[in-house]
Length: 204
Image (cartoon, helix red, strand yellow):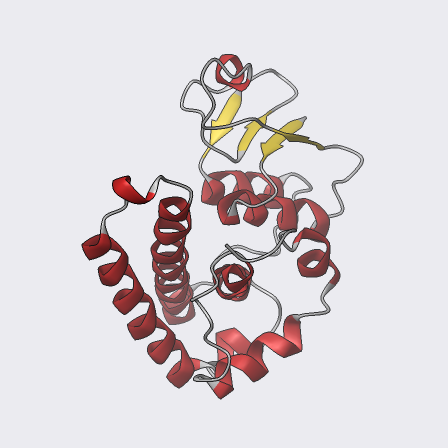
């Protein structure tokens, strides 16, 4: 199988982490895609140009990180990252949705930073910055949630990836203002799948 990614995409990082957590390195070839480039050869593989994108052994392509992660998790018939049953399942989905909102908010601002200054929307940047601060405050209050402190799961993966975007955005510096989140993130920092997929480069 081929998994198309970019090294800085938080969405692709979800799938890269799943490959490592499930021990699929020998079955999944991770390929760097060239995105947001006119006439990229990647568009012949995935017309939408988004990452991650998984091409299965039968040639079928799959887009969308939650779908890809779930499919990879089920490959061995022993899924470890599904949402639990009952009320915990709804809590798990709620936390993942909040973490993805934080991820999306910061990602919008990261993408804006690569545009010419004349094309940046200051109002959008301010809106997303405020949204991220509200979400950080909520997670600060929920850092001790059982689903964020128990066995490694999708809420933890999603939140860790969102918080790690401070490597990509110089004014997304949350660690001093949110000590509970800082301690939470520090507890996961050395997990091999997170360390191996951490984005390279300096903040924008």
